[in-house]
Length: 601
Ligand code: XMP
Image 1 (cartoon, rainbow, N blue to C red):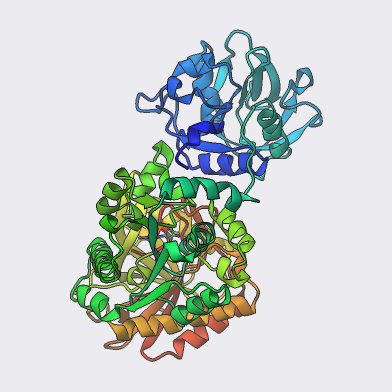
Image 2 (tube, rainbow, N blue to C red; image 1 turned 90 degrees about the vertical axis):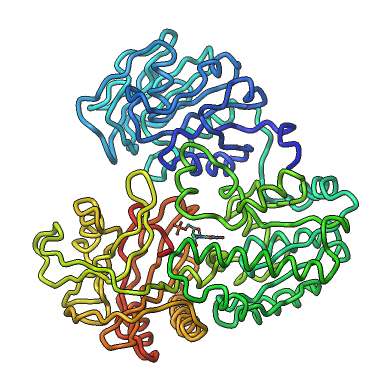
């Protein structure tokens, strides 16, 4: 942790487009240590790299604003692999030519290895289906390169310079749709003298580093009940001993049903007793009084956390001057800010990187023992440490908890619309009288959702999924598309002002518990990434409210796809939620991220 420079990673230069994390995880899966960096990192800072992978990205190398890397990376003497945009930048940087392709290719394509496929594409057969996504292509190879694969629409689909160990593929070997993709990556990884990587035995390896960083101090840590902070806390306990660690579990009043009791039981089962549980729910509800803006709510929750933490740590004599430092469950994707991931960070302020924490980090007062791990690796470590399977496989839950799932508004905010840009929809539609956060084009949006009503409210048809993509594309005033699962025809939405109250939190907790129960019962819970349930301040009656179901599939939450839930499960959830007091509508969020985000706020 303190001296990652001692390790030789394969460095992925992130050209954007969300591919870098996937490549990094694949490389780790192949047993090599990987790290993601901004493409503008100077070559001299990459001297410790065992190899370099240039990731794909959505741009054209001819746009002046497109990302570039330092051409001196080719003189470091380590293997370099350019993927998609990475291939094009590499071609241009080494004196080849890139031109607009004959056709733009998105999706499956067949390539044919030539000259035996060279080193990377050797023995993969005469034809191979790969996943491509590009407009430009390399029209003239740089000196020293030989062609290793071609396709009907892309003459130079792969090429390499074996002498200098430089490789380029126009397709994406990291996606599962590419046949032999992993094999191709493996061949590259095997050429790189990278530090071996495996999460097995991580606790032991990281133990020395934790000891060294903490020295003779002790660690105070906020645990939320989420996977990351729980695993980090148990790891610190294991390494430092319980007498040098103190946990604090703050009951914000915005947790899931029975959450505090479940966490307490899980810790007790492990013999972990050094956690103080502080009921601060009244303080949180007080701080949230009258607030409706999502970022203001986040700030209020963040500030209250800090105030409670300060009060308790002073109470227990756990301050820096007493030799204590702060532990956090930060994981790898939360720590990197590159061209590809920077974007997402501006959408919502992440609670473990607020300014107060940044300052403490600079002073060396923070320890983050999981900051090199991906979520799936954290889970594997959790199991290794003996944590209960159910706890380790719980869905991620945001720091501000239900606070970002209870939508608040002082007055209705809506507009009339005749044409929403879709054809052949037999049902009706209605614009919601509240807005939610999304990410469209270059940044954060705060826009409306469009609800569709149809005769088959539990059937998620192809047409619906298509509308969910088309509508926000054509009508930028919408960032979400929903299906109403509780009524077949629109009824007027009746808005009632709503802020965060204990009553609303209790109601949402009940709806959330129904969803979790039904997902577990159908054995679907662990198959999806997350399933936020959201409460909206309008219904069909004065004072009535609505619930949104938001199941998503995702790898690391940078992008996500709405998950399809089977009809019978959706029906049961809807029927049970409709029985809760004052719930008038249930909706199903069909939108991907982008243009929506996973959470509504
Ligand atoms: P979005 O809504 O931005 O969420 O697509 C991406 C992932 O981050 C989680 N999330 C948070 N986690 N503090 C957290 O610890 C936060 O303030 C926060 N906001 C969103 C969200 O649940 C999803 O997994």
